[in-house]
Length: 419
Image 1: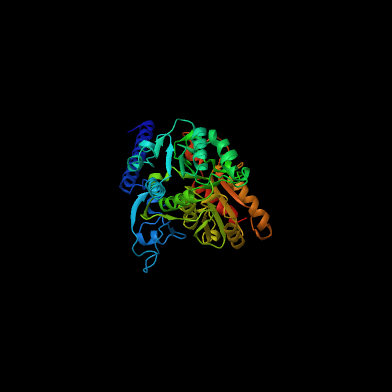
Image 2 (image 1 turned 45 degrees about the vertical axis):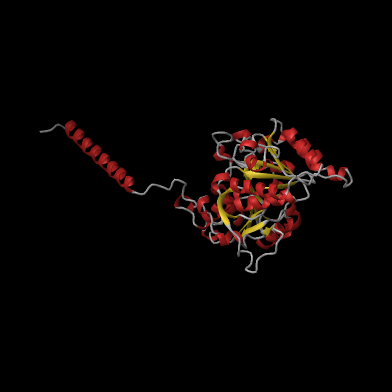
């Protein structure tokens, strides 16, 4: 007969064998399931409905205005026009090429632009237009801005590049104290309206404190400057050509992560899109979600999460808000911003959420919240909500946690809608 100890050991071995068998079966079952998508469960840029993948949609971009002097063809805006598949940096390069073809005084200059630039936005321009019109500068942002101001003051079209917007601060005095004020200072005798300063901006995922900043807010009090941020290739080309043609100096901030990831069918002809004009991307009635640049796609994903939360988030999203109608607006021009479009939207929805990558303190969202509260206070059903980066330097390995993601935005939507 087996001893009590031997029986206990046999039972333990049987129990352990059963646990191992169960764990093995679970592992096998899990391995047979389809792996999660590489880009997560949310819609990616490649499938975003905010990007136009067809010729017809591209040619019907709201606000598009052709630069050609000839009259439109009888067939309308679509007839006789062509598009080409471009990412954002190719569209920016195309815009500069059009500008230089149309204006013999136009020059492109900056650090490394003669051989394409860090992000390839000026690739081939030196070969197309010559080294006298596309040339490298010393590593001096203050010098680049000052040179551009002098060039524009003498009647040339100056298209300057600051290699990263993080390094625009040495040029701050030239831009804010000279470029922005020279028309007022001279009583209208001189201006530098032909100056456009291009610069890559916003996060890239690993740029950290010196290559992922969003400094647009620093210029919001600089009367005389315009600041523009596009969201994709069609917008980048049209807004850049509008900036180059505008009679005011413009800082054109290009979301660097969209250079290659955002792809659209882009009209090959020269065209402009209106400055200081926000665009309503999706109309709504219950809340206005306002943003610009890369966070446009984060906002759109957050709206989708709100409508159809995954099981892991469902308990945090009341059924009562899942059918909420959200109005998504791309501000596009940050300075001066389109107050009337935003106010009109908030008067309708009675709620506002502002989203941007820069920190909250002194950010553009603060100014927008102030103006909206002043003009819509008695109509609001919730305080203006801001979702922003944290008030710290942009971290390196933790950049993903610094930049607002769709879950943070969705959480803010829920709180605002249930206030």
